[in-house]
Length: 111
Image (cartoon, rainbow, N blue to C red; front, top):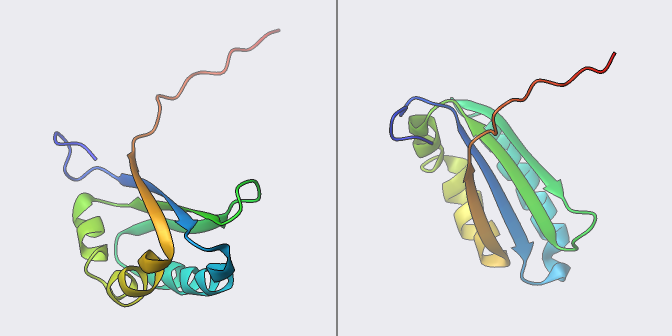
C-alpha cells in the first residue's frame, strides 16, 4: 500500500493464533467459509489460508487485492461482517502485515 500509488495492488499477510487449540476444528471450518466468500469478491486476486505445521494453533492468511478500494470494500462485505469479525476474531490473536514485494533480483549464472 503506497500513498503515491493508491491504485496499486495491496498484499496482506495475517497471522492468526488460536487462543485455545481446542477451537481449531471450528476455526478450520470458519476459515473455509471466509476464504470461499472472499474469493468471490470483486478485486480479490488471492485469498488463501494455511495451517502451520510447525507452530500449533497458527493460521496464516495470504491476501492480494487489486487496489486499496477493493480491500476497503472487502472490509464491509459478508465475509468480514458475518464470519471474520463476529466468529473468527473472538477465537484468535491477530497480527496483520501490510506487505510490499522485495525487489526482484536477477539470478546469477555460472557457466
